Image (cartoon, rainbow, N blue to C red):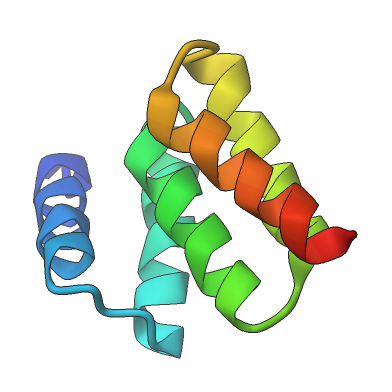
Length: 87
């Protein structure tokens, strides 16, 4: 049984609901373990880390997203936010 489609859909629902708790952080990582090309998981994880003031880790997640999708506008914007917070 492939849980990937369910986990990706569930994560997207969590993102829509703006959920940022530890459970969703773990869900992001689980989705990425199954599908390392799922950009929304990188970006949501980065947003959670940024809220926790873990800017360096957040930037790494955004950079991973940009490796998959170099022109993703949300990723570029989030990277800019990380840079602003860092400086």
